[in-house]
Image (cartoon, rainbow, N blue to C red; front, side, top):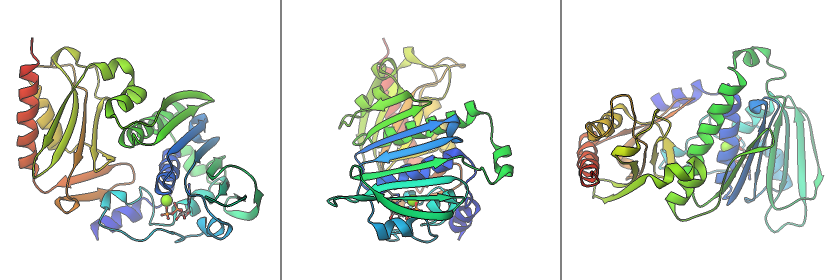
Length: 324
Ligand code: ADP
Ligand code: MG
């Protein structure tokens, strides 16, 4: 019930970031192996997400912008998969209602495709379209008909940073998908498909940072951890390079985990510096509880103390043995 209320609270599209997240989630749901996100004016003027996923036929396309039009089976075993906005099947309807909206799509193995357009959710038109298999969703003039929401937005710099940070997290969590992000027609990052997490980290966060990382893998009955972290000589001026992925989804650090990391680094990192650390974990979904907030994803682990000890010991050992 708690979770349901939190979801309902996030039902409206607040900012360009919400749109980007939902469109990217849809592309990943459609099994895209290649995904390009383009924004202009921090997403207010344009958000375009292009994928090579399953695509839609004419009927599905028409349904897609109607409320509760989800084609996805309810599967609450993957709680992390609950969308960041609204209930299932409401994202495109909510987005189309506050923008000039267009989807071009061609279903796999069909000869041609379709284009749907709408303005403020009205004047819906569907016409034939010939393009590649996959889907291109375009959101223009976001909030043109809701000036209150426009006014609520922060500076372009801030809105753009929110989008970039979020996409970096998604790209890091899905290294088997080609990701490209452009802002104002300039590439922000481009990441090739790989089975190697370090290669993905290099493409998204930079080669120089990736080179400084050490790795530990822990296979414990309680949890499996794959941790990439900076050593004592490579601490950073800010906390930007700290990521947590639970079952391949980016989530926020719980307080106790931040404490665990900083305790492990206690004598290794100067007081005003920060470690870079990316923690990838796989855990039985029944051992976690997910709380959805419109802006962030929080996970509660049933066995915080156990995981704290496992990670603390491993990090501590690794940092000691890497000391000169
Ligand atoms: P939900 O994702 O919860 O089902 P949405 O409003 O986000 O609801 O999307 C509505 C429907 O549109 C989806 O269920 C899916 O069938 C279809 N859809 C949206 N985006 C894509 C895409 N990129 N590729 C294929 N189908 C899509
Ligand atoms: Mg969706």
